[in-house]
Image (cartoon, rainbow, N blue to C red; front, side, top):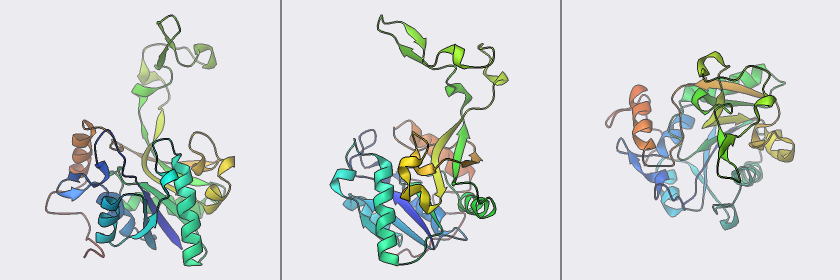
Length: 252
């Protein structure tokens, strides 16, 4: 069995009720649901949440609901604890062997079925990898360019330059591309959640050996200025207000 777990909570601040916010006439969270449902390999899609609004959308799109405990739905709660809770629920309910888990976020619209499928195919082929994770290159956010405020109020390098084994200058094009997990999808083996304390920080659910699924222009939506960026990505990938690049499944 391959299960997709979509997580989202009700207490968003940057955009109130962001996970159900309409974008191209559909709830924001419907896009990752559709991506998982239209994967060649995903057998079931689950939504883990504490929000009645999110539950309503999840049911409308034919997902199974996991009630996220209040202590795992605060702003201080670690998201990986919600992943582990959902995984244990699925394992207990389904009584089936789980091959892979696909982790998705309600506020990350920019994921396609073929990307999920590629991650699954990679893990089936490369048995030594723990996960396949979507990433996007953001050289402008390289640790070389990062600064922090010192005690005297001045800006200093966030990471001391002596930690880098190359000449540091202002030309970001000459450096290796810097990749960040873009929250599109994490395709992981069950052992990543079963032994989550052994995973690489700060995202221990990815395990130790991670395969990059490289994307472009991807982001999760947390602030109003990101909504037009998400809409632009959807339009670029053939979503419109009236048309989808694939059919709706199980919608009531």
